[in-house]
Length: 469
Image 1 (tube, rainbow, N blue to C red):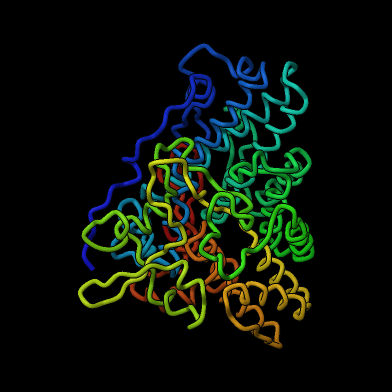
Image 2 (tube, rainbow, N blue to C red):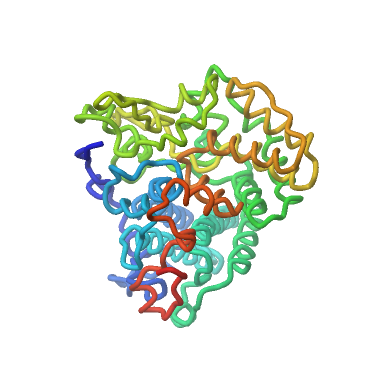
């Protein structure tokens, strides 16, 4: 395939933040060396009123979007796994496709610095809101809950990308400068603690049904995922059930509406990112990258075609293939690309959010958790719920291994290109070597399951590097 002429997300117009936000949340040259504020406005002044504290939280979400760490997860991780074809990947993601990152690679640095900047902002909100004597109790509780959730979400991605990472839970420069890499166990303990507290502090319901801010059940959904990843299958099932049973908020769309799953008001959506609020670009980044070429009339195709392995993983009658994949003919060869997101106008308010968590994943989390507890019959009920929604017949594997294989297959065709799910699944289940050595025999190496710690961070904070880099 030839290269396509695409605009980098770096060139998208970035919206301005308010003065309070730019003053409170300064950048960082490394993990722990935070720049001094450029004005004399103090964080304590920001948290004197409910409105200014809420504006600080808005700044935290803005950082998640404009720092690109969250929005770019899908691209790097899909290339690292067996989802996207790296032939036409644009900088800084091309090396993800061959699993040949280096410690000086910009792509890994972008994830690292982006998440730690967001974590610093969350830490500042938690500290200053907790210590504020002038905020109302209700707003104080809410903003701390949101910051705890965002910090947990950021560490979840960091630990799954890099393994052991420094665990910064304060804004104290002296403390943070001495941090070494915490064990994955300790990082997950902190994630669980933050999410459990967020469950008690976040609102019960969405504001105006806008699903771009966390509520209690959003924290519960991420907890279910974390428990699955840490092999706490009892609690994974429990938390997934809590979310699935919240039928006033969530429901699976029927097969006939499967193309509407990613609309911003979809009841299948649990939590998404509203890129229209800060980036100046009203379509989702998934649509912009995966669909951009074919829909905006470039000379051919998408910048990120999916692998033939993924395209062939769908069963013949799977409604998801028709609804969530696009295709184009180039020199007589059919190529497929991700088309889960369909709003490419960008001239009005966004119709879609970039969905981070949705209900179908909770069914598959519960299915896996139940099978791992030897409850194969009920695990298969959840699995077949998702298969049936896709227009497929139920299956009845009888062994644990066959049931788990079926669940991994279903996760692959249900959650493809969504926030690193396939990449993380291959790693956490020990399948990465077998799958990726067959797909990429010339470039795959076992140590590539973790991304390299950026070289400048290794030097600045004396951090140990991951093996293989």
